[in-house]
Each structure stands twice: as structure tokens, then as C-alpha cells.
Length: 100
Image 1 (cartoon, rainbow, N blue to C red):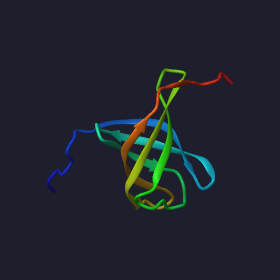
Image 2: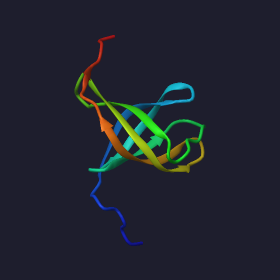
Image 3: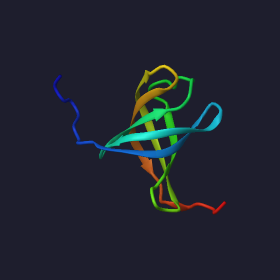
């Protein structure tokens, strides 16, 4: 199969949360590129392509998170979860997490 991606990807699982029908739900970012990212959504609810997605990304070894807004370009059912591709729209400055 011919590679159609415009930008190289970096594979690194990052814990994150997205705002879904049930409030903040867990997800994992498994790929990132200059224009977007691949996300594993831990939800039984399908999200429609074209939806605006809000994410909180937890940075490894830091007490900070990054808030990301993107558009869901595609979504595929994988049984108990979904995978999808998000194109970046906005990345906000990191915010310090409260110690719990």
C-alpha cells in the first residue's frame, strides 16, 4: 500500500482525555505529526467525522497538560473502542496541574 501521509509520524502513547457525551473520557494519543494526531478513544459512543474535539494531553514527567482543539477527520470502530484521526486547530499553553 502506498504511503499517503504528507508528514512523518512519531509513535508515542500519551495519556489524554477528550470531552465527550459523558463529560471527560479517557483516550490515548498513539501518533503525532505536524498537522494532527491519531487517537484511541476508550468509549462505546461513535463520534461523527467533522466534529470538533477538545483534548487535555498529559505530558510525561511533567505536572503540566496541554489543551488541544481539533477536527475529527475520520473514525473507525475497533470493537469496544474507536480510533480516529484529528487535525490540529489550536494548541493552548500548558497549565499547571493541581497536586492531589
